[in-house]
Amino acid sequence: MNSFIGEIKKYNSLSIVGLEKNTGKTVCLNYILDRLPSDNYSVAVTSIGIDGESKDAVTSTAKPEIVLKEGTYFSTSEAFYSRKSVLSELKEITSESSSLGRIVTAKVLREGKVLLSGPSSSQGLSRWVDGMKKYNVNLTIVDGALSRLSSASPIISESLILTTGAAYSSDMATLVRRTKYIVELVELEKVEDSLIDRFINKDRGVWGIGEDGSMIDFKVESSLAVEKIKDDITAGVRVVFVGGALTDRFVDILLSSKQCSGLVLVVKDFTKIFVNELIYRSFIKRGGKLKVLQRSKLIAVCVNPVAPNGVVLSSEQLCKSLAEVVKVPVYDLVKNKNIA
Image 1 (spheres, helix red, strand yellow):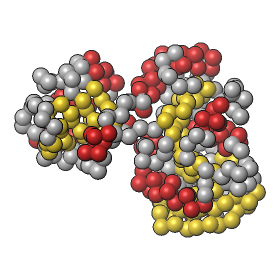
Image 2 (spheres, rainbow, N blue to C red):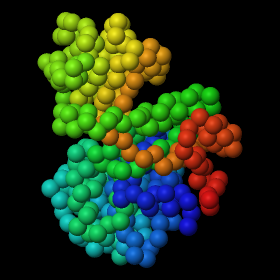
Image 3 (cartoon, rainbow, N blue to C red):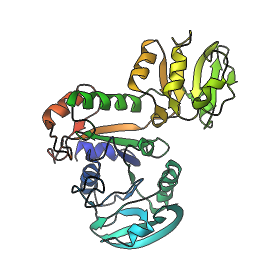
């Protein structure tokens, strides 16, 4: 058994997320689908965007189509289901919908190609993953959309794969640095269980834990409204929790305070972080810590060294450079069709 596929099989759900268009996300999906076992192992797949087109709508370049084996479950929009070129058995028309109609779930009866366009929100995807349990599916796979890291949230999937490449940056040093930063965010440390219990049901607002362990409500809707807090938010506080998005402005305010060193800043998961790398590094250098309530298992980083504009990076050097700065396997699935 391929160790890459073997690692994937340890989990019940997987998200594949591209850091940019044309970084090899569909190649990665097809690679996995083709190598997962067919006997006594069932897979369901959907997408948060539109995947499986033969031509890129923006660049007009050829794209790999999505091929599903017999027995695979898939969920897509009514509009795309009517255009399928695969023989399938309709299982369900759900109450979930997108701009292309309601979401249809079907089972492949004979191998063929499909267009995927499933639930368009994190909540919808989470419900989809739960809904696949009634079909006794072993693995659900979500094909993430362009720069939509939200599809990799732990509320959706237990594991994830990131795809990156020359389309993300044509400069290898920049590409490696930017990818490394995303990987760092994915692998942020979880807070202790006692804090998870206190914050897990808070989806908005800014909260603190005082030196005496008391909970402090800063009475703002989100980190975007932090200017409404007149006092130093860090005074007498050892932990700050942001219920929604974490922004540059909010971290800047923490950096300007006197109590930044030793402060633990907490968010639900890495998909809530919208902070420039330079500001993040400054916060860490000042002694601050950024942690999460939930995290997924990052299985691998997959690379596409070729960009639609003709830029071609060295696959060997790109994989080597990334492997030196991230703690997970790095693969070029086109060059290495039988990775160990």
